[in-house]
Image (cartoon, rainbow, N blue to C red; front, side):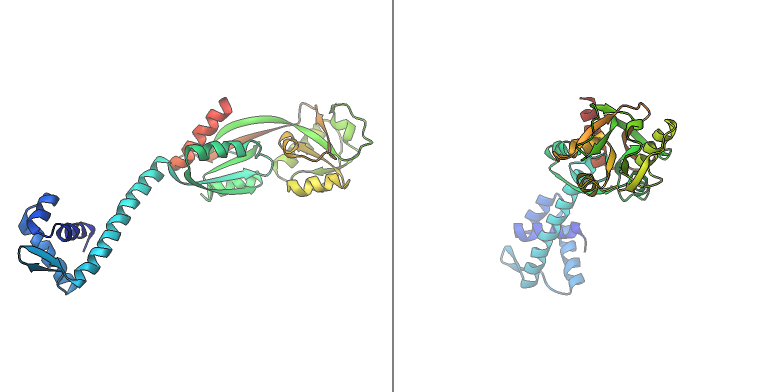
Length: 293
């Protein structure tokens, strides 16, 4: 039994005549009668009986009719959903976000949701190098990461470049609005990342190029904890501008670091030469439009 035969059976039940059902289905009567007999033989029970000129549905036929309606309806819904997923109207957006690269994402996702209200979301937050592996493993299709990284396997859209800031709760600091790395090299510093990863490497490289040796007391890639540590006076921090924009604490004072060597870039990546869902492509298109506006 297949979906075509179920549709034939539905037409027979609803028309109550083989001739009328055949006309509705645009087939001749003999094949339709043969399909009905084949279904009864397969199920081992009578589905239709004659009552004068009209056909009557047996109890077994009524049971089959109920499931036939459900199955044909499910098939139609499946076709609609597959088309919508294929067009990016529905489906799931799987997105990786670097711990320090999420600023502006909220507005972008709101706009995307307005355009594609049937899309659902699966968002991973992690360090950039780990996000690259998640994209390779197809756990997420897209990721917003910190640059630079080795990205020969990926397509990349460069999003923005931003300066770094010095954050402290020490009100005794007498800096102007902008400072240099030399001004803070002896302060207890918290790095917003861990050894071997992008932001950590950028900060230490900038100190090295300036021939300075910073006093590092901690590494912390969790924004909330990092802000708590700075607020409590555990140490000061060097962070990208994105973190400053997320900080609402009046007890934290921020100073832009004007060393030209210290700047952070972010990018959106996805695998080269791999299938990209229409949902992901729609997000790329919106992000590109958002970036250029």
